[in-house]
Structures are given as C-alpha cells and as structure tokens.
Image (cartoon, rainbow, N blue to C red; front, side, top):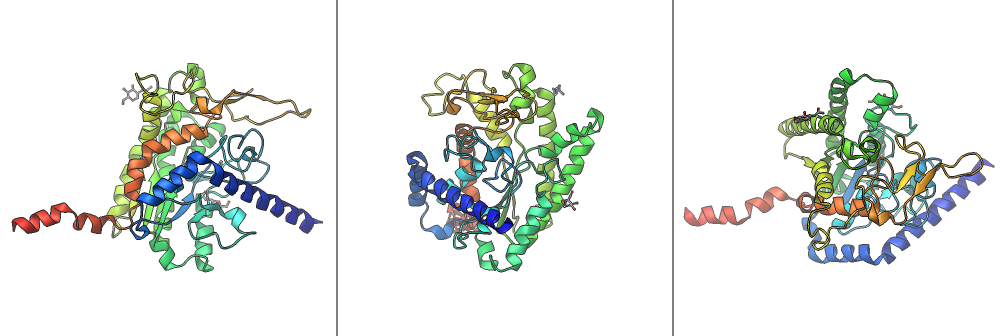
Length: 388
Ligand SMILES: *[C@@H]1O[C@H](CO)[C@@H](O)[C@H](O)[C@H]1NC(C)=O
Ligand SMILES: *[C@@H]1O[C@H](CO)[C@@H](O)[C@H](O)[C@H]1NC(C)=O
C-alpha cells in the first residue's frame, strides 16, 4: 500500500514537473529572456554552466514536503498555474538567475531522485524553504544537511571534478534563523550576539561548499528584513522598519568580513557576494519616482510593501491556509503583478523579476568562467606592454 502511495506521489511529481517545464517554455516573456541570453553568450565555454543552490525559500523550487504552503493554492497561481513548490505566485530568484545563464532552472534534487536522471547537466537545487543554518520549526534539512546531500551526490558520481570546474554555488540565508530566535522568545539584547553565532555557522558551511571544489561560491546578502510585509505591517506597509533593517545591515557587514577572510585563506578567491539587499532597496526606492514606468521598472501597488496574499494573522505567514470547514483564512489581491510581495515574507514573480533585473549586471560578471584570465588579456595589459 505504501509503495502504491509512493508511486502515485512520484506520478504527481512527474506530471507537475512536465507541466512546469512545458509552461516555462511556453511563457513567451521568459523564453525570450532565455533566447536573448543564449545568443549573446556564445561561446558557452566562457561561462559557468552549472548552478547548485543551497538555502531557503528564496531559492527553493520544490524540495519541501507536499504538506507545506508552497504546495497549496494560491502558491503557483501565476506559474505554473497550480501549486508546485515555489514560495511565490510564480517564478523565484533561482529561475531568473538560471535564465541569465541561458538555462532552465536546476531541478530540485527531491524530484530528480525518482525520475528522468538525464537532466543533471545544469546543476541541482538543494534549497529547502523555511530552513536556516540551525534547525527551525520546519522539519526540513538545514544548510549543513543540504551540503552533505550534495557531497553524497558527488561521492556517488552524479557529478565529477570536471562538472565542478564549470559550477557556481549560490547560497541564500533569508532570516529563518532569526524568525526562530523570535519564536523561541529570544531577547532583544541578545540578538546581535545571536547574529554573530549565525554568521559563524554560515562561515563553516561556506568553507564546506568550497572544499567540494566548485569554481565559485556566491553568497547572497540578506534582503532588508525591515521591508518584509511581516515587519512593515506595523507601519501600514508604507515604510521599512528601521531597527530590523539595521540588524540586517549588521548581518551583511559581518558577511562581508567573512567572505574577505575566506578569500584570504584560499587560493583563486572563489568566494563572492551578490548584493540582494541593495537590489531590494533599489526596487523599493525606485517606486514613486518620476518616470519609473517609462524606464521599464514596473509600478507596484500602494502601499508599497503590502503583500498580495494576506493571512488573517499577518505577522506569521498564513497565506493559503483554510480552516477545518475549508474557509479561507487569507485574502488575495486582484493581480499579483501589482505587488512586490506575495505573502508576508516572499516576493511575487514580478517582484523577483524586478529584483533580479537589479542583480543582473553583477551576476553576469560572476557567470564568467575565468574572470582573472579575461582581465589579464584585457586592454590594461596590452597597454602596459605597448608602453614598455
Ligand atoms: C543540522 O541538522 C542536523 C540534523 O537535524 C543536526 O544534527 C545538526 O546539528 C544541524 N546543524 C546545525 C549547525 O544546527
Ligand atoms: C539605524 O542605524 C542608523 C545609522 O547607523 C542610525 O542613525 C539609526 O538611529 C538606527 N536606527 C535604529 C532604530 O536603531
């Protein structure tokens, strides 16, 4: 009976998987992005071609258990049209970054286990929504466990040294450890010390990823926690909460120091930062500016930080929850495209589109296969040769 159930589940996964990829291919806007990237990026050899993702819901594209929010309506309503494991109405950061590299979004490893084993060449997604470096209320693998799974895939020969040479790891830590601290009744006075503790563990994790041998390890700065709807609700969703943003800035400052230290301790400086904090702030600050629609950045709804899907208990994320008699415990906006945020902590697809567009220039530099050699061969060297 259990086997029957399992095979039914894998059938559902299979169907969802094909639905999502068909829908992705059909979605004209994003397949256009795909094509544009593929055309401008040949020869492919100059670019990294595999992506491995670790972290939480900002990157997860379907690893969590079916019982979690990402597998319930209205998640996925814009893309792929049904709930399919992404914490948004549609595409998330992973999907946009992969499209910049001219490839499909790496498959969630949980879905790969059971089906089509050929689709590994563009990398794999190990991120689980709701997790942190430490264990949280979500009973899903923390970052250490995610890294260990990847190590196992490497040991099993799913990936080899040559794959790693073309690989970039992207790591997101979006604050679940801090949510857990608050849930555990942690005091304000101890919070900065706890941030230090989280960053120390993150440093251990980043070292572990690098040791596997990937070409680049890219750490996202933490998004401005004070701008998340759950923290901006007390400010009528109009402004970001300053104390929370200050704590985030402190987190990111420590992160910067860690990355510098890690690069000093390794050859080739494989560690990089992708500044998600600034990308969010630029999207938020751009709104309401004169001509923001003309320059192509979407006009987001008013108030700016109000999410599309609002649970009856807005502080905790209850989007998608129904009571025992099936009555919705949330309200849904008319058009998710009008909002930066989807629920109390996650952007909408169009929010992610705006944020990832802000990240694009720096991400395109990170995609380069061998930055160092390109710089050495660049104009400055020929200029100095010519003058000598
Ligand atoms: C990660 O999860 C495992 C399994 O629950 C646990 O043993 C380990 O202590 C956790 N790691 C950290 C850093 O909390
Ligand atoms: C946040 O940081 C800024 C700059 O350091 C400071 O001026 C401000 O008072 C801080 N705000 C809070 C609420 O801590």
